[in-house]
Length: 532
Image (tube, rainbow, N blue to C red; front, top):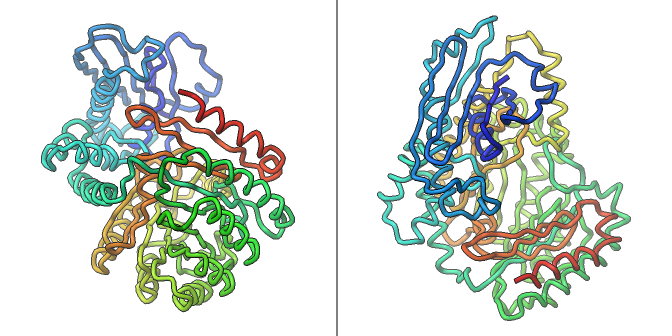
């Protein structure tokens, strides 16, 4: 276990995330000076201790690993004890202070001699991974670069900041800059500052995938609620249409779940409601995430196309049948191919496909084979996700059980560091494939709330697209550049405040609760948008 001792409760979330990124799979605990410790904090042997002292004009970080003990300090230019203020989150000095703190921790952990990590008492071994994104532990690693470019900074200035302030590796600096430039170019063309986007959540799926942590309910069991759900959804959509009467809608995204789990008639009803309240003449981008190939039929595709929907996703996640069976996707590789070709026949010329690297049992050769099969289909965009095992997914419990079974068995069992290394190789394979096939990276994010299992090692999710086939909504939601109105179970509305800060309004996730409490969901938004 890794123990992080803080002189006061501040920056604890960011600090723990940074420490975890160095040691994926290791449990860590934050202990605040003066606060009572929980019993579980004494449960494991302490392999590494990080002591952090925060004061107005100095930050001190001490790292203890076996007989290795080094303390370093960094002077800061604070004029008052700002981080004790109630309004500390809005203090302009806070970002500077946090960056100095995280850089000091990064350098201390990076510089622990390897032999000290390999020679901890009692036979323990503490493996380290140097985070390629440096101190940037958030979900939007390209956001800083994009904001700097939009503010008028030159590329070399941005490179220097990413290197000196955030300790980014050269390869991630170039990746972040490439995506940031693409995002800035697309945003400047779509007049995002005067618009907003709409998200519609459909929580039904054919089955729930093993790795899924989203709001998802199998249609076979919950489909009898679909009509009542649409009744409630229509009420919320009609209310949302009146919030921004003097603004243009930039994009509409129908996600889930799997929207095409609905019947063709239900899809027709839903899209008809959207078009009635948000007329197509407004010229917005319209995406529906078809997702699961086993939910796609010609009739549903024709409903979407005839209504003017032009961008859809057909998501295989992998083209390895053994993996599809393992993760609970009740469809075949052949069904994916058939669904994609059917969408082309209907007329769709902007089709995205999602893939996941790091799925259980897959290696680089499996991923290369998946890409080879994807190449034959020739989608217009491709999103490559790194598997992150969320606490809410069934895969977490499966992997935990596997760890118990294999406790003490080294043969054939990959460590967290080895898994991270394999995923980095897969990311590189995906990037090279995308470049060779004419796809450009245009947005990127990382997932939060991971539960170990190489989730903290920092792999990103990257969207690639051919020119003109990018999804504007993906950029807007990731970079938080405009407000998003959201309807449906589990949907999150985002109101943009001054200085691009965001205030959220969440809907309940449970379907029956959403249906019975939709008026409450509407009232939540009424209050949000009535606030000055």
